[in-house]
Image (tube, rainbow, N blue to C red; front, side, top):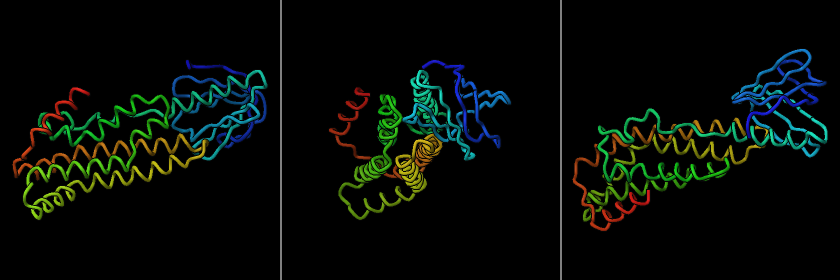
Length: 259
């Protein structure tokens, strides 16, 4: 949906300490909703909006992060336009940040890119590709399922330890434990992501934008902690040569071809 408005509405509610009750116009332009009444002009950035929902009456409610709630009604003929406005607010508010910008290890020559580097970051990069294919915000959230990401990282570290100590279980367990300890900040970030994920899944419409922003911030921290963890994990596993089987090299080449 392109920028919309101005649309003539009846506005009621509380906004920045002012009671609204009467005619107004609403315009959606970029990341700003502008409400204009006879008394004042109120530009509302998406970051200040906690959520929005369409009502059965044809009106929409817009909740702000400071607790104010505004109801807009455009009559029977304008109900469809207002509903479309609420839908577009969801699309514009629930966007994804550039998760890999500023990372040092992911794709950096100093991080020792190669098969193990790619396998370590694969859970996040696969999730990001899945999110890119999603057409709705809930599909994006499902692509970054915290429990699945945690399990994938645990599996990666176990595999890497096994490749170095395939015949010595105690040494293998010790090596895996050291790697898991080094990646502890990453697993803590994934736990925070899981908490944010639960809050987002349980959020009501009037709180969904705020919970989405918290979830994306938690997701960004997972990428950052993974970036930091790889440098430590690489050093730990670098003390012993990996004994990568031929079948794993084959599947790695197939993974690269699929990507």
